[in-house]
Amino acid sequence: MSQGEELNELLQVRRDKLETLRERGIAPFGHRFERTHTAQEILDAFDALSKEEIEAKNQPAVIAGRLVAKRKQGKASFAHLQDQSGKIQIYVRKDQVGEEAYETFTTADLGDWIGISGVVFKTNRGETSVKAKEVTFLSKSLRPLPEKFHGLKDVELRYRKRYLDLIMNPDVKDTFITRSRIIRSMRQYLDGQGFLEVETPTLHNIPGGAAARPFITHHNALDMDLYMRIAIELHLKRLIVGGIEKVYEIGRVYRNEGISTRHNPEFTMLELYQAFADFHDIMDLTENVITHIAQDVLGTDTITYGEHTIQLGKPWARKHIVDLVKEHTGVDFWQEMSDEQARQLAKEHGVELKPGMTFGHIVNEFFEQKVEEKLIQPTFVYGHPVAISPLAQKNEQDPRFTDRFELFIVGREHANAFTELNDPIDQRERFEAQVREKSQGNDEAHPMDEDFLEALEYGMPPTGGLGIGIDRLVMLLTNSPSIRDVLLFPTLRDQG
RNA sequence: GACCCAUUAGCUCAGUCGGCAGAGCACCUGACUUUUAAUCAGGGUGUCCCAGGUUCGAAUCCUGGAUGGGUCACCA
Image 1 (tube, rainbow, N blue to C red):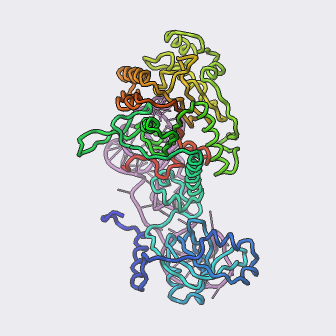
Image 2: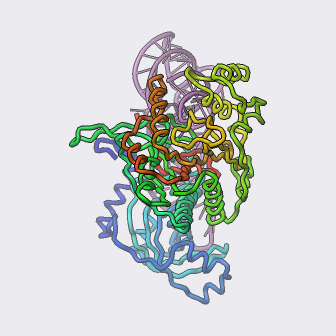
Image 3: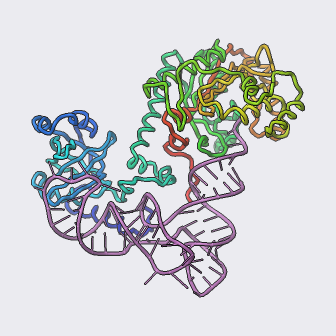
């Protein structure tokens, strides 16, 4: 509440009640409170028992929660308290708690935090509840909660005031609990495979490791611009050079791009590098880690996403990008051809190109415009063209393509991986090609990174690397249609 | 960035052809000792997103803007 804001009746009433509490010697913002049970613990232990069985146990319980429903009935009241585990009904009688405490309870507002000490019982209607012997006022709520039946639906309010969304919509909390479990499961799996988790800088001197526009920031004391990282890649590969053979980081990356149901400017990536491995090994690892997470967190490898039923059970399809383009369009990019011939094919098939695109870009455009959205079941698409893969090793048989794959599920990219380019001379040429692209207007082309090249020149073992977008994986496993549903506080414009 | 849609009470939403701003929940007053979207009686609490314009008169029509959502673009 800003200082000057005039209080409407709803807000003023609550402030008046706060004063009344103070006058009666009750702290409106109280102190520690020791409880014996959560709401769910009581339900788990007693809900299956009969009214008589519960009565015979005469089980004391101390609970605490937010008052979310209240049904006053003269000298007795029913209400529901909500804690992190769920809701439980309480029954407060004037003749049990005394006049003072009953007054405190009946004048409490929805949203206030209350502690109850009493015994577990079951009502005539069969709801397991706690009958109060003592009422402790814990904390005052000065603003009214959203409506109890319809909840909070306004999407903008749900994102801007996520706490209200969490109070009113139980599914939301479940999604974020699942998100936490997914990440924990991922860590446990990788740790079990002997990977070392590390933390590398998010402030970079050169924004590399991906093709994306960065956020620029400034360090005052050094008087220099820094970039928020767009990928973790180049630092983890330096660690491979340093002899850490299995390494990963789960962390935030930042890309200065558009916002959509699948893109947030900051998002969470897993990146992982394994010495002496190639992209085939990484495919196996990717399958293993995702099916492990699904089994561990959801207990199944068959999941529902929107209208689709997805089989996450192994093995997943593995298809070359050129074969997929051929399958879906009839165009055969295995044949040797000039950039001009490729452009002609794009024109014939209605594939839109930007100026300066070469053979490799055009193959990729065919894939993105004609194939990608059709890959519903898990599919490893491999063999991406060199032109769009400046950090991947070339394929030995056909150097137009690389030993790289992307994982597609429900038509979306979920992972990107390759046999890492460890030839510093080739890497320099790739960077130089990217710099040329940049000068031709591709502002997402990769910049030259001399420091990284120097690291490669000391010798990097053959290495397989992987990136998984955690947010999209959570979307998939929680059946969430928008990335904002799996981010507690998605990026929004400043309120006008 | 383009196009489409939305914005009315704390929340969820109506509002007809341009003619006094509405409902339910929440809230306030009262009744009520096993209720549960408690019930009963009474009470409307508002910058109709903002700024202009048209009109005797605008929540409603027009123009511009803000915020959000969707689609597209961007995102290897």
